[in-house]
Length: 108
Length: 499
Image 1 (tube, rainbow over the protein chains, first blue to last red):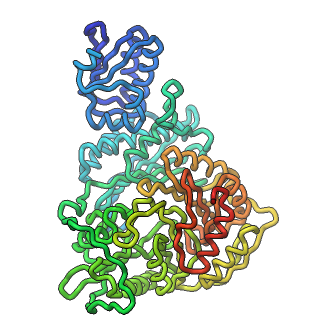
Image 2: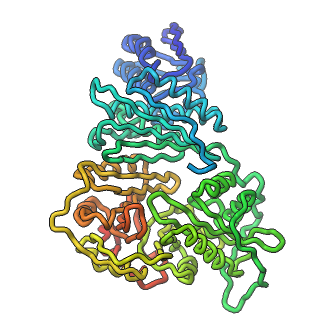
Image 3: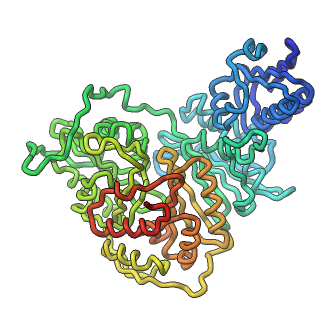
């Protein structure tokens, strides 16, 4: 699992690639949560995310709550169909802002 | 294990995370070899990861060093993954139930793993084995070819009714025999001809699954074939782990209705059942119309219960009852192939009269008794739960009673209702002196007694049902026999929601 972080147009852009499973979710949380606690706009580009399990989903929810508490926004983009399906099953598609591409996410 | 199932490997791992990636990599390889698509391989890995996490988090005490087994079994068209552990006893109160609709601010994702397992796997079973531990079985079917790409749907709906009196079709000399493996696709077409795509057992629309189920011994298909080689109909023996074999999936192509080969198929199957040493057969008879019930009476089946709302509304009968107004209810019929000895059963006092009436109806004699101070079999009950998502139905079997039976059943109810399962069918052993104690408690929860069934894995069983958001319109149920009508009125009287 790889995570790269940049600032784009006053938003924190997180690009996550690989697998978010029990073994890697801890590292993702360590990298994302400090940012989620300070930023008010975060975009997570998931085009390279191949797999996610419940431990990975948990980190997304934690990030959403942290940013939401400050009145900020978290937008997800470029979900692969298999990942989108898992988000649908978990009910996450209703509670996360999900858009098709990075440009739309950064513009929102 | 029979010739068409293959042990693909068993892994025994310690109860730590370190080897989880290796287990998932093994699962990915096994599922690739089994022919699963890359998307399904990912789903299998996800379900297995979540299942392993459950074992790791809930089955062992802090600091306890232990192991658990993961066994991979492949058949012609599916992969089974069996997780078995001898960890902590099952405690229903400790396992949360995930609600995907919960307020995000309140959502803590407890139970999400179980929810994901159920959603990405085709079937699952979980067995509390008492002192033998716990087992979770995950099942995924490989991609299979449906009949639709090759079958031309008729342009105009054909409305066919059973022949009226006096109409006799030109008799055809059908060959009644066991299905050949390469005839599975024709069987599927027969089912479509009769039911469209509304038959609740979706496996019957996949030729590879029909063939595999016959090879694996889960189905014994008999067919009627014209001298020209055209398939006229199908009837089968369906085998279950916990219930007596069922005679079912009776379909006759519309053009051959009235030929009378269904009865010959039934007799052929009964002869096969006797040869297999089966002691009795059950049959489920739809109540949207009377024809199946009349046919089963002719075959010698007698009513022993009702399975209300057993099948979803989508089950229709082309040309006979095309649009069902509610979930379909079945009459449960039974026929002994080998008469059992007279015996004692533990029947709840307030249902004893009806229970004896049902036994008498199937030609059986039982003595109803009660123990003055019954004790459960052990500390922990053994409950098996089978969820049929397509039917929105869960079957629960109390294999062994325990001091925790009622709390365990309550917890299982919560779990299946989160999955929006509409109907629970609960089987309680009439050989267990605790059953008369449980029935009133379950009725307090909303269960209703709906019949009995001999020759289950627990001996004779008492059947109770629970309806989750399903209203039964008793007046819509079409019944033929007096016993079925009496039972329906008996059930209606006890149904607090009945109109």
